[in-house]
Length: 375
Image 1 (cartoon, rainbow, N blue to C red):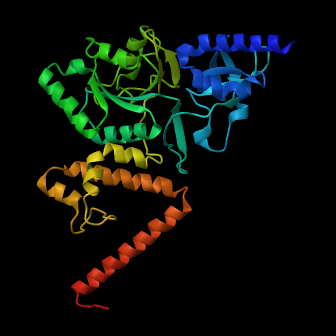
Image 2: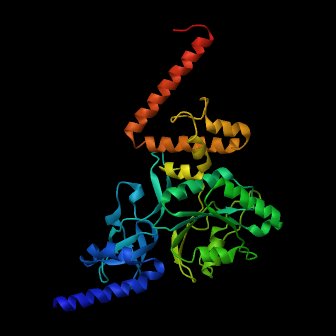
Image 3: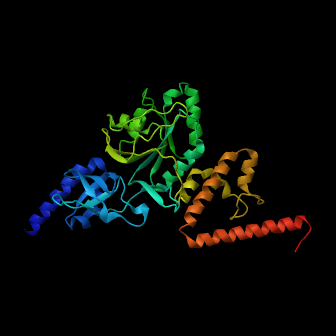
């Protein structure tokens, strides 16, 4: 084949890929990133589901089943995930394998449930992390702070959706609930929605009408119902929640990527019982932006906001500008994140131990001084 003919075939292949994969988020950036793999004869595709060592990948030729044996790294965070863009064997290969996946732009990662505290990636290459919170139960503001910290850290735009808004018929009360969450998650879009009466759905559909959105939340938060409403069909199975506590069973058991009729793609996820932080220091700072601002006004740069003189954080606490709950939640998430990071950072572990020794020595010295035994 001549160089000219080869170029024409390559251009046709590129054009076909772009047209077929555009609804799933394929763009010029992904096309450029894929060129080295195209030169090896591999085919592009987006992973729409992963389970039991295999995955469903949408390609220019349709959705195919592929084995992931060649993309099983030691680091769990680097395991192929729903939302990844993959390079896989061309049509005709049997079995068909995912050979590589393209470097991720964003990824939502939480701490896994294992004793080793490995990270677990829930969705890759997302533009929006949408946290569903049911209004059928009392708002858990601490959990919202935790979710949004991870969302900010993922690199995606956080959004909080207060589902089942039809259960709060009083507009003023609903407005207060939205305001409470806005104060809890500064800078985050917060909206109330109901699949039952249509509240907020038009605005929600416009919000997710471009890019890729991952839908997160506890079981019973109404994620699958919301997904079905946005998709316009019963794509996800829905189960009733328990009357006693408003919690649901895990309707969604895998993470599935689906296209939306108005544009954009949606990744629905199983209900999350736990959302442990995973190296989310920047995310925590974004969630507690007002505390970070107070901290910059402290007399000492290394102020721990405990009992130091000239602490602007404690001053805001005294005046009531800063709620006690917010500071306690901030401290809790900082400690948790520090423990997670320390497990993989030897220098940080040493710094933490040194700080503990210094604090312990200061405490003993204070106790001795109180008893009149000054050394």
